[in-house]
Length: 472
Ligand SMILES: *Cc1c(COP(=O)(O)O)cnc(C)c1O
Picture (cartoon, rainbow, N blue to C red):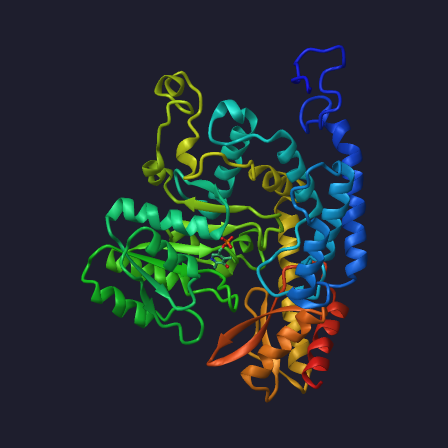
């Protein structure tokens, strides 16, 4: 017969139970576990020895299944074994953006300091749906989002910003806010617009967006003018992009803002990729016109070097966020709000919400504007250097000089099918993780450089790998 657990016993409280992460004793419980985690991260990375392990999905899937099965054992293996085996398996099987040969997507190598801050967020576990779950975290979020909003809108009276899970959620919120102001608004966007904008229209029951041609990769102003004219003044939301996902190009923001003003359309700028150029005196000019948008998407898990998730939606006028207000009696009853407890439900469509602001705040404080500018500038310089190397290489063709940190290139004379196969071969062999993008009717390899530690030697290696594989 088993005896039911009792809360009071002769044993010290909690003895034999898995320890908690918080409280006075949490750090001491975490310290040895972190040692295990860090050793497993290192062991996995050493065993991998490159940007991703060789073998492709079949081998990797089998290896993970073998490590984890059964995923729900009858009897636990204990914390050390579970952490060691699974963290090592995940590290071994990672496409690790800290490796300079892992450069396919806007998949950032997070800064160590930001990952360390995220540990504190997990240990304390504040939830940003009510003040009584997150007293300091909510205050920190309010301060830092205001500062970020002011960075985007230095001349606005009441800028504000919300923390999101990324560019997708920020774009959805922007479209939602426009719909709340104007009813069934028509989205007008360039062909290079992120797919999440089109999905937002679908999600919110809005008409299909009007797509404006982007012949050189950025929205064509004359075509946008025509598209807005054809709407005859019915409510429109133009979405422009500062850093296209495929090619890292920036739409002509001032020209688009002029057209929006002339036609009475709203403007949202998706700066998920390019936004952090704001911190760089050298590159900030590329974002001229950004503060003429009603709302701006930023994504600090791209050029901001944050672990996922770290999205931001900034609005020029904080009163625009009013439609998000919402009451749930157990979280923000009116009398609590009237008595001065901050009301957090209107800061998101989510309820339980991680304090993603902590790692962002730590990063801003640790590096400052000039530290972030240095990272942005180094990463942009790496892209220029990569383009130089490709231009000098007789067997390779560069699509165009990079604007942000994306470099499109291909082996000269190769067919699209050859380019696609080459990318898959590099992946399968565990030698490089490169992306792909169509431009000017052809398929290109895409190097999205986000690693500020990348050296000229790393770029040489990457290019030599492509060149070597293309002649095999
Ligand atoms: C990455 C990206 C998004 C989507 O952001 P997530 O963080 O992946 O949700 C939206 N727009 C642009 C331009 C992007 O590059």
